[in-house]
Image (cartoon, rainbow, N blue to C red):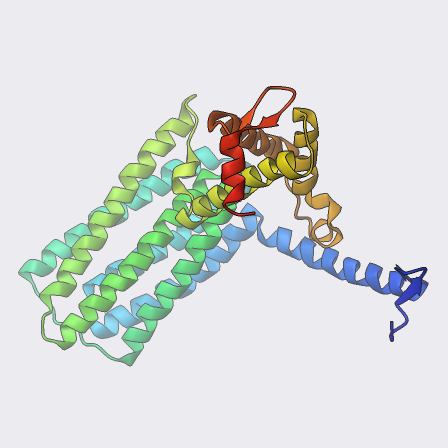
Length: 335
């Protein structure tokens, strides 16, 4: 009120013209940020960001690997350089709608990289090299792990949102690099302890990991080429699945509460109340950011919750709903 944005009228607060102007200005700023945020989540933007980071990381890893002689780091540098080239292909594929062809190329690259690194690791068994470890090598490895972790989350999130298998493939590779970075760290520490064989074993593990990922992605690419749909849900974050389960549980119990405490008696009314609760368009700040929930997806979640309430025996009826004694006991646990 001191700013002159709000006034009190008959025990109710209301915005003044100055307040409305301030609110509209904030919403405009949020809208501009939302445009930038949505652009950042575009598949082509992901491929550009990935390309830049991969080229930078490959130079960093190659320099550190040559200085230290770490086979694990050298193999990882070669793989990262090829990842940079694959990022360029992904960008071109998304721009010119040639994603299927690029998916095949990505898998071929991954197989080739895995075979090359496997050969290099086996060769080190017969011609051992003791890595020279210094602070720069450790820094390069840690930085690589952190950046690849962020890329993995970024690529996978956008890939799942857009349904792009090419981005999913890159996210799998980024996840591999996180594991590789951890393995290289173990190998470098082993080198300090004069146990250089462990670094060779790490290089061998990297190769096997890459080949395994290539095999799994080959199956997905073959499915995408045919009429069989590709199930991308298997690549979802475990935390995201847990959150979705928690969210549906809370919605289910809230819907049961509406029937018991707020007198909602019909299925139509219950669905309408749940739709209203899940409609982000009613929140100006989220609407300005462009964060909305698709109605078909909301309806699917709502129907799933109602079906679960009926299956568990907490609600009875079809069009006219009634809470059962079991449902009252369940509500009684948290009300």
